[in-house]
Length: 230
Image (cartoon, rainbow, N blue to C red; front, side):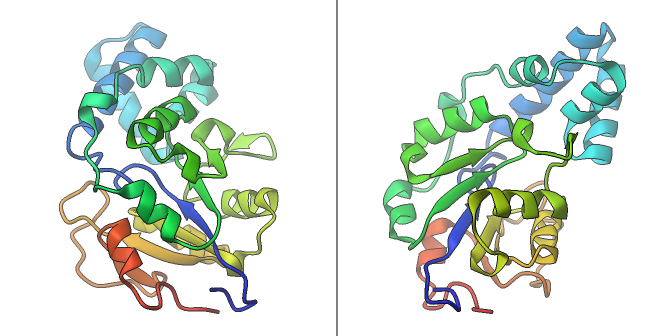
């Protein structure tokens, strides 16, 4: 519970937080992103790979670079890059809907992935109804500019839109940079740690901007005091 005695609002990441994206999906996303850059710009695969990586590192999402530098439609690019069937690729812990429902408070999805992909994953996992609202990368516009995680301005914008103070909000996420951004916005943080995944960084300790480290939603439920109050 929060310091005000009200239940927290949980902001959940999607990939490698609610399901194991490294199992099969990340490779499909990489293939889809490269293909979308090739088709959109008429370039070869090496050039597309170079641009995809460059824009992802610079902006946090390849799509933003495609929009800013090439005038590509964000909607069309996201659908091209995430056009695969997620159902045979998903791996996640069992009983996820029941576990999420046991957490007191509202749940909000905040993912740098596109909304149509997020909805497909949540539907397959049968947890779409667990979430009161969904924020995908196309929703992450602050003052007219795309600002995906780990943007502090984005986190403040989402909290204002959801009508929740930072002290009542908890971000559950696998990426440390995103958790750092949430802490800078005044939120509490839970790191879902999976050794060997792309954003684990091989670190064994818990950074000071992380309140709690777990390896699953089920593990989060086992904590007697999941996140320290403020």
